Amino acid sequence: MNSHNKLHTVSTDDFYGLNASIDTVSGFIKEKMKSRKLVYRYPEKTERDKSILKICQYLLSENFVVSGEHRKGQWEDGWEENLQEYIETKSLKSLIPKYYNKENITRLRGNFVISDSDDFELEVVSLMLYLIHEKYFAYADNIYEFGAGTGHNLLKLRDINKSANLYSMEWTQSGVNLINRVSKHTNDDNLYGVLFDNFNPDWSVKLKHDSSVYTVHALEQLGEKTDEIINYWIENKPKIIVNIEPMSDTLDQDDLLQYLSIKYAEKRGYLKNYIAKLRSLEKEGIVTIHDVYRTGVGSLFIESCSVVIWSPNSN
Image (cartoon, rainbow, N blue to C red):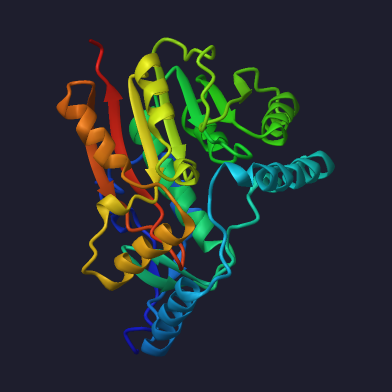
């Protein structure tokens, strides 16, 4: 069999940095992996070349959308669509953002991979999040996701932690309304939607004692405007913050696919200099960085799931 046609099954080894082992993960995650059985192959040279060409054409085009505060209305409309679908169906699948699975080529282990599954990218990211949730939040009491969107990632935490208070911190009213409807419909009295703008934090909103914080592809929308949310977290002192974001600081400019990811992030105005800011704060004794790594997971255009784990110092 041609090596490119050889099929591979996603395993815990496919996620850089997590140091997860099938021998140590929970029975829940083992069952998830067994039931999903995510299969992929590596692309042929012509397939890889076409993918790289597509990225280059995009990078050289003038037809692109830059992230930022000006897009709030688009996010409001997008989550409203998910909200109306949930009202009609009462299915949690309706919370999945429409931007997933637009390409059949995604990134795993830092390489392009191809799957026949229509939801391969979503399932890979979901599995990665389950591993991260289990590692950092299994016993947390109060968990906040900032920039939670529809709350579809936050709800995965309920599979890992049955008793925690879960807070969806979201800047769109439609996103807040959606998670509060889910809370009511599923009789989850410990699930809350809170209106909160990462660009302009409301300092009157206080995090509970013994809280944990995470983000998934939310800070990317802030570009370089992360000082306010960082300061908000420092003031509220959660015990741990886990950011899962496209962070070019973790990538190698001398690697072609990583270089293209960096350039795509620049083109879209995504998160920039975030880790550098945290390192500067660490030198000042204000925060402690516990770990930084890339998972190698992403979409056609970008390696989107680098991770930094940090916490504000208590002094």
